[in-house]
Image 1 (cartoon, rainbow, N blue to C red):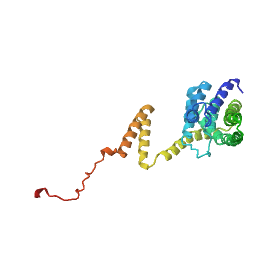
Image 2 (cartoon, helix red, strand yellow):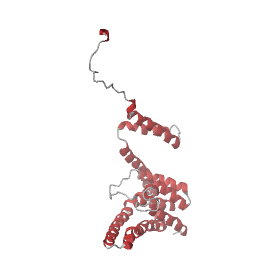
Image 3 (cartoon, rainbow, N blue to C red):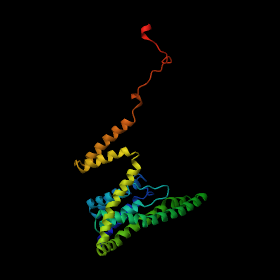
Image 4 (tube, rainbow, N blue to C red):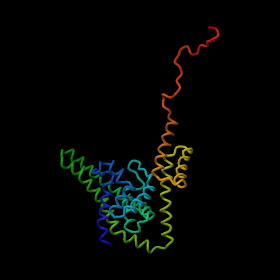
Length: 276
């Protein structure tokens, strides 16, 4: 156990709390869950905490690709994305700094411990909500504030910041030991899975976004330009925006450009010009 991990692990746990969907400190969900709670931003922040921004962004990019099509229907979710992002990326930066390891750890943590703490938080929130309702029935302003604002935030902090801090501070040694003592074939399997899962995430996103098979042409054109034409990602973004705009204009013609038929009640009467 290295004492130098204390500050990075603590900062990573705090970032995980700020990225919670119920955290109000960063303009609510807008700056918290939808920005700080995303794996790509998490990689940047954890990279700052560990003093290796490049490795953090690379790990965040790989984890983001896995969860890019992650959806939550109501209160049901198949993985807790903030636990996955900060726990997996934090452990990866504390050990090997490899994106494949970050992906594997993120999926493992998000779908196991993340869901356990997520459901525990929902159960405790129901308790605080009931206490706040009882306080409202008795006109207890202090009880409403404590049970509606203070206690839920303390619960969220304890269930997010503390587990992530402990996982990184005490779990990095276990991860290092496992990666150095398991058979080589296991580490190769982890690397392969870590490379396949981002592709799976992108495929899931394409399944949601692409509505007709003809739209696959744009995907393959972008792949060819990026892989063989040597274009940068920024140039490809501008080209994609132009193509998307032209495609939109082509399938949604303005009403003013449509040819209007003359509104004439006698338009059905045949007249021969030679007769007049």
